[in-house]
Amino acid sequence: MQGDEMERQEARQYLEDRVVGTSEGIFWNMQCISLTTIIIPNILHSIYLGVLKHLMEWVTSFLEQHSRNNKFNQLWVMMPP
Image (cartoon, rainbow, N blue to C red):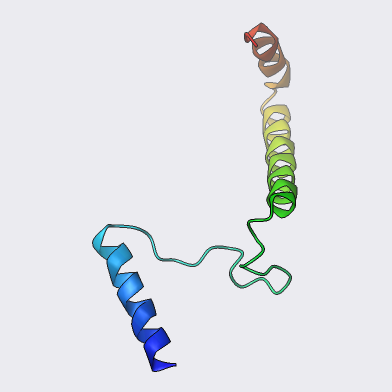
């Protein structure tokens, strides 16, 4: 156990020396997700879809609240593919 802790401290120091953030990610403490399987594309795809859905709902609500939805739609239609 002590060896594992030393490795963690060395790894943390290595990252901090290179100005890499060492805070834990949101998924680290979730009981329903195993860190060894988080890279499975289906799980990541589902997470990205959920985040995208949330962001689109937020943006739509924001635009409606500020009466900019029509202007956004007009500009969006003018965007090239």
